[in-house]
Amino acid sequence: MFKIIPNNKEIGAEIVCDIRSLKKKEIKKIKLALQRYGMLFFKKQSLTSKLYIKFAKNFGKIASYPRLRGLSKKYPKITVVQRKASDKGPSFGEQFHTDSIYTKKPPKFTMLLSKLVPKKGKANTEFCSQYLSYKYLPKKIKKKLNNLKGVYSSKGPISVTTIEREKEKGKTNKELKSKHKIIKKINNKFAIYCSPGHFVGFDPSSTEEIKLKKYLFNHQIKKNFQYSLEWNKNQLAIWDNRSMLHQATRFKGNRIMHRITIQ
Image 1 (cartoon, helix red, strand yellow):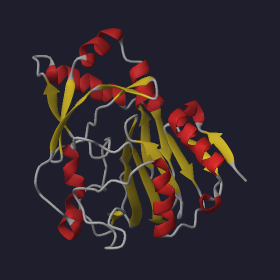
Image 2 (cartoon, helix red, strand yellow; image 1 turned 120 degrees about the horizontal axis):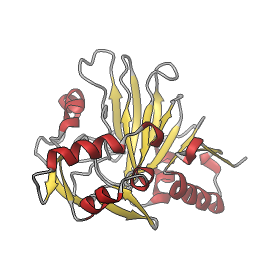
Image 3 (tube, one colour; image 1 turned 180 degrees about the vertical axis):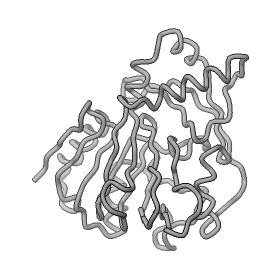
């Protein structure tokens, strides 16, 4: 069986299939659905690390994550995104962001495969469509943002959520910084490409910077641009890291996700 079930407002869609036995034409449909809906999820997938990597390669070259060591020597490009009941700080990724925007060439796509999850609905991942965010941005704000770049840092606000894991699996404490245009054209559509969790300033800077930043961040994450994904064990999600903001919701407990990012 192969079926695409769009969410409300077409922010994300469920794909009903068995990833282990997909045909080429079905992979093509998945890629087109990813362009259209921005995020896809697949329930009840029995994937080994080898099969997970194999599926990910359909979408491009697998990227390395500069902050944490990988799952194992055999699978260094699978990152373990983990929350422990003993962790004192916020959950890993608990602020709206796009992955690795502080690098010169951030990943196009991110995948998460759930290995251990709390009770359903207790540890969701929230997504915000930045196509919709751009669409409903006032013209005068679009004009201001069109000529601006955002400056991003690995030491930005969201870095506090990685402290626990960096103690165990950290690769580097070196600050990574980058600049990217805030208005980006993706798949012939415009999107806001700005990660609140990593943002440290505009380039060029201006006297309106504080006011503009506050307006932009509030606008990007409006509820009518959002979809909250509930997790089950052995569920996979993939999203366009350029056109979707995402964040982990706050919870207490244990969760293990295996992440792959794709250039």
